[in-house]
Each structure stands twice: as C-alpha cells, then as structure tokens.
Length: 105
Image (cartoon, rainbow, N blue to C red; front, side):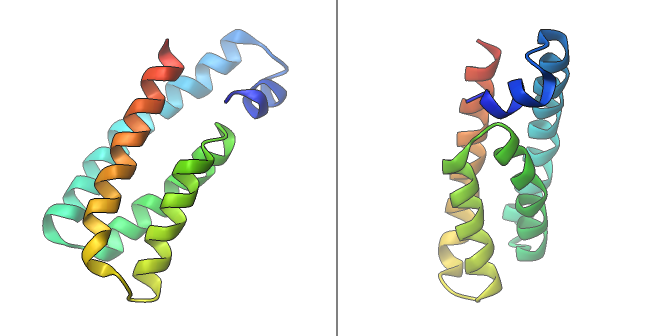
C-alpha cells in the first residue's frame, strides 16, 4: 500500500508520517464535505469532494477507492444511476476510514 509513498519520500519515516497525517486530516475534511453533500443530495458537492480525493487514493495506492470514486463521478457526469450515488459515497467514506486505520497501525 505504501510503495509509491516510500518512493516519494525515499523511505524516510518522518516524511512518510507527514503524508499519512495529511491523509488523516483530509479524511476528516472529506467526511464533513461528503456528508453535507449526501444530506442535501447536492451532487456537485459530492462530485467535487470525491474528485479532490482521487490523487490521495493514487498516492496511497488505494485503487479500490479510486475505482469507486471514478464510478461515482461517472454516474453524476452521465446522470445515470443517481439513486445509487449516496450509497456509493457512504461506502467510499467507510473504505477511507478503514484504510486510515490500517495506515495508523
């Protein structure tokens, strides 16, 4: 899970911790924004929030999260399967929290 991060930081533990801490704080902000979008059914907020998180998914090699984020974005962009978007977004958030716990272990 941390291969790209190790490459980016040269394996420096303290630099890796900086990125992990950034991910941790981004999860909190992501959750706040995503929940607001879900509660108000604001698809633009959901899409923007999810799109903003995708580079983090790439950095931490979270391909399952990236794939789900991309699917949500596509559903919104193509105006298809919109009923599933809140459930998908909630699942994405749960997956992020799970990955965060794994990173902190």
